[in-house]
Amino acid sequence: MDIKDIQNLIKFVAKSGASEVKLEMEDIKITIKTGGDSERAEASVYPATHAVMHAAPAALQAPVPSPAAPAPESSPAAAAPAAESDKYITVKSPIIGTFYRKPSPDKSVFVEVGDTVSPGSVLCVIEAMKLFNEIECEVSGKIVKVLVDDSSPVEFDQPLFLIDPA
Image 1 (cartoon, helix red, strand yellow):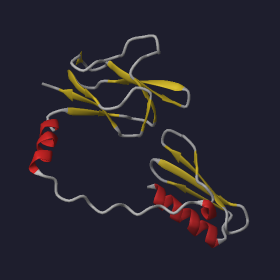
Image 2 (cartoon, helix red, strand yellow; image 1 turned 135 degrees about the vertical axis):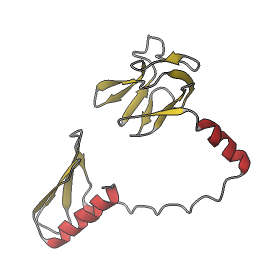
Image 3 (cartoon, one colour; image 1 turned 90 degrees about the vertical axis):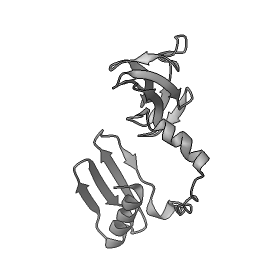
Image 4 (cartoon, helix red, strand yellow; image 1 turned 135 degrees about the horizontal axis):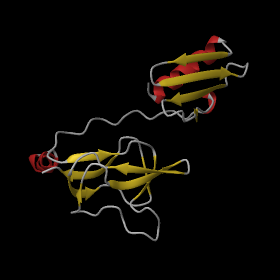
């Protein structure tokens, strides 16, 4: 369920006159409470990690811009780098947070481009809600590229590293 579906659900519940609606699915729990007037609704979303997200009242939400038109077909020159990166394994962020290449500011980075890694090697840490989560490598190989700058925010499933398994 994406944010647009949740916003539509909030609007529907607010208009229906119901004071509270709970929805539970495999990996998400949603509770929508209305404050009596049909213009204000609040939603609590609980993903599998039990983080809490509060949606803004329906009347205050900014309109969501429509997606841009699809890009034109890429040239063969642009397709060559993409084909070259297909042989690499992409390590993606398992959580939302702040990406750090070092365990602390006075220490050296976990891995550099060219380093050989094995399963269980720590690649970086991601800070989420004051907790520092070590991101470990799941494959053996060589670090080809670091895709994120140190101390940068990262999204769930955002590519962090390229690893050559050869």
